[in-house]
Image (tube, rainbow, N blue to C red; front, top):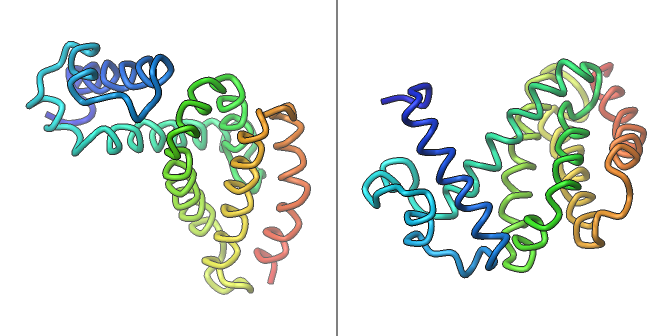
Length: 183
């Protein structure tokens, strides 16, 4: 069975929905794999066929979400420094309760590191190999600035509207990344 198999997608969707709802209810740290199995109505062997543990499930959920928002961003904002960042910020803003539950359990840091790595790889692949500073440095700078900003924004209650924050990040990061492309 592959990820495109409808049964695999349904199983993963049920497990992800169970993780989100249970995390909102009782916090990520209190969620046990047994709770996920009961809520998703999935067997233990099936869970472990897809994920190593609940953190692997959480990271998988998050990275798929980033991929989805990046695809949207490439269409809606093809010239953005970090395509999908606006959509990701909107999602974080709408899902504040889930984010707060993860932040209480220090799992937001794990997710932001995964986000930074994914953004860094995506941006690095779009930069010319001979740019200065190197694609790796430019991408690390932009992705690190984004994830650090998101962390502060979420820890302060995400009070700034997401589109306003996206515009500010684009205004601050855009010129530097575009200059690296031209070098």
